[in-house]
Every structure is written in C-alpha cells, then in structure tokens.
Length: 270
Ligand code: IPD
Ligand code: CA
Ligand code: CA
Image (cartoon, rainbow, N blue to C red; front, side):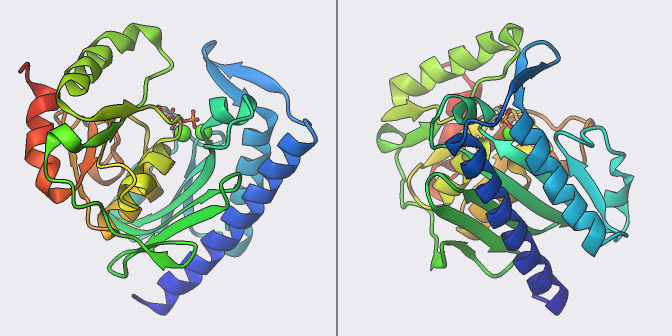
C-alpha cells in the first residue's frame, strides 16, 4: 500500500458517493430519459450524467491518467495497460435496467489498474446504502466492515449468481448452463448488476458468480472479491479482445473450495 494508492482510493470513494447522489436524485424526481444503444441495450440520461461527472473529476485531478468508461470511451486503446500509466475503468450505472424499473440493485463501479495489476475497486450501491471497496493487498470492506467469502464447500448448498446478455442470439448456451446449475446447486440468482454480484460473493451472500461481461462490469468487483478471499478465474478460454486483467469474458468467481467443482459443472454435461 502506498500513499498514492490511499489517495486514489479516497478520491474514488468520493466520486462514487457523489455519483450515488446523482442517481438517487434522478430517480426521486424522475428526471431521467430512456434511450437504446445498438438498438437493444437500454441507457438512460443518468448513465451519461454520471459518466460525465466521474470522467471530468478524473481529468481535472489526474490529467495524465487514462480512462476506459462504458458510456464515453468504451473503445479506448488499452495499450496504456502495457505501461505504468494508471487506467481508471468506469461503469457509471451497473444495473441500468434495474435503475429504470425502480429496483434497488444498482451501483456505480470504479476500478483502477496499473499494467497488469488491480490497484483498487469501489462499488457504491446508493439505493441499498452500501459502499464496497478494496485496495490490493489490504482486504475488502463494505461500509468500513471487513468482508470474507462464505465457507461454502459443496455445490448442492451453493447459491449461484449469473446474468444474461442483451443480445438474444447469445442466450442459448447460457440457459443450458443455468439449467445444469439448477439441477446441482441450491439455487440461481439474476440480480441485474455484475459489480454487485461480485461484491456479494465477497460478502458471503453468494457462493459463486459466473457470466461473460465487459471490463467496466468487473473492474472493481473482481478485486473486491479477490481481496475477500474468492478465487477469480475463467470458464472460457482467454480471448485477445481485452488484456487479461480486465477481461470479463467467461468470468468465474467462487469460494476457493467450490472453484474446481463449479468449473467442471459449468463446462461439462453431467
Ligand atoms: C449489466 C449488468 C448485468 C449483467 C449485464 C451487464 P449494465 O450492466 O451488470 O447484471 O448481466 O451483462 O451488461 O448494462 O447495467 O451496465
Ligand atoms: Ca455494467
Ligand atoms: Ca452501465
């Protein structure tokens, strides 16, 4: 842990708390409008407002840092990850469908990377009044309380979370995996925020999470889960689309004792 890390963490927490206030206010006053990206993916004016708020804050404070943000720079050149330039990875609203439908399972996610290292992660869920964070090597916390994964060891008592892509053509193999898991595990949850799914594994409220997601969905939550003792890996072979450390394709996160069994179950027909 360095002075820089602590300063960056406090900065990220401040941004995430303020971003949470923007979400609370927009929903309280119904001041947001809905739109669609690529014809099928819901986005609201609050996603854009939070994105702008966070990116402007980072640029003002750390002009030499790079930003990969879902709404304003999703195609950013990630070659900065091959240097020592700090890269902020932002999901302004993770759980946009929940946000637009008045659900509480919504978060802002802020991760910071240098090279192939996860430095920090902050996930703030304003409607739940919970802010999760982690600093590499210093543990994971929720509202100041240290987190630890559950002691789950057996698939039959494991609570498993996943999510579904917006593209309906990609659904079939996922539904087939979910069916297999429903037959062998306690139950399945689809809570609608990948960042919070990862935090809930960290908090021991879920035993497993698997899904193919984008870097901004997992950038903060993967470190929070890791720092709480989870095993973070993949059920699909690595693609070259994203550097490995921010790759969310085929992400599999679980308690250490469950990992090999859940990996086998997700990948094979039992
Ligand atoms: C989505 C959520 C959801 C997951 C999707 C993500 P968004 O993010 O994390 O839980 O299943 O894959 O795209 O669109 O609300 O930022
Ligand atoms: Ca997301
Ligand atoms: Ca989002």
